[in-house]
Image (cartoon, rainbow, N blue to C red; front, top):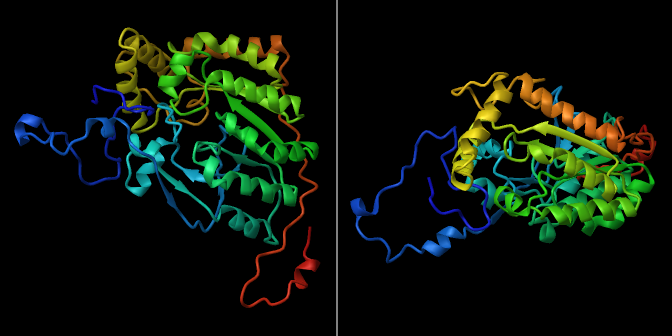
Length: 376
């Protein structure tokens, strides 16, 4: 365990990925001699972000999970600089031989050709329009979007083709695309969810170090609502013993800011995320770490088992939890949602206005006249 938190980062360590055949181990200075002559401790505590470009062949991801309200998504980036310690997407970095710890926060993969690839996929004759989820895996408005603009170019294609999209983000940076969102909203093509995990600035700074501060997320809700963009709040994830006391208050201030819909789910700690979270909570909150972990185990297993697991992958249970305490959290959330007048039905996207784009030109196609006879 790293005894000193990394500046601006969520995790305290960088464990090997679960698919790696070799394991790294830290050595004691006394065993190897004095290496202070080349070891810069300050640089180690401020690891830099590196961005790798990937020429993707496809951008539409599909899923058949019964736990999520969408079956197709767009992900302009892999990895996320926000550094949320609890992020369920962290283990995905293991598929590229990277760690779900620090690597996930500092080794970002961007897809600069994503908009062109999306245009090509939407132009296929067999494509049928359904709303995309943008930001279902990693945040589309993480810090690198400010300079790379991959998300913005995707939105431009969606607006051009009148294709609906739902966006989830923790970033106030979404307001940079305000004019696109306003026009999409005018055509009933967009709904935004801002994730507000806590109103405690100190907890947010430790748990989500490079995401927008809670007050800036509320300001984003207010600004979007004022501009006519349908916006909701995600009170997620709920971490028993850590932020569960804030459920009602987050819903209240978000409703006052203009949120009309809401969502919530229990914290998910798959694979390596369990160990990263345990390390984090024991370091930052040693006085209540045992209680937090005990509450999570109770919600995961349905009963207070001291040695119980910290994650249940079963569909229908992994995001809701089991047992008395999980039921109490759901009841509190539902009562607050009804009291505050949040809408209880999904947003009604317009999927009828979709206009299939012309396919990108190829060496074998010199004329674009033929696609004028395409269907839809």
